Image (cartoon, rainbow, N blue to C red; front, top):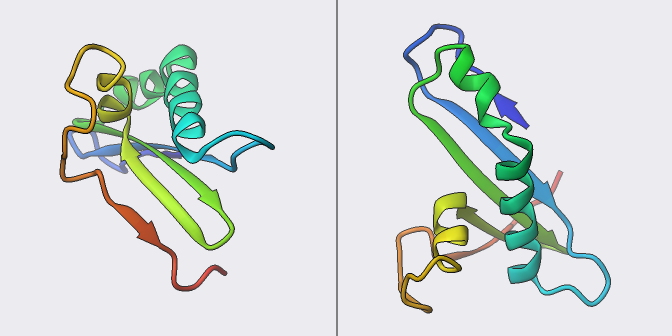
Length: 99
């Protein structure tokens, strides 16, 4: 999903939504979603429209549980950052109500 601002210079958002496949952990689904966003370069459209900054997030849903992370944090853990390093986005959100 792309959230494109009405005016240039305003923030834009790339949000990739996933459900884990059979046998896939939420962490694996987060990584796959983050790689998909980067490989398919979804943010390019927002940058071309003048969005600044562009926030890239991935969300994985499993029943009524959801994991939401910034893409840089998902991919950063695979690029030499300390594993288990706590960040503000390392929070598991429990979805109270799904519509």
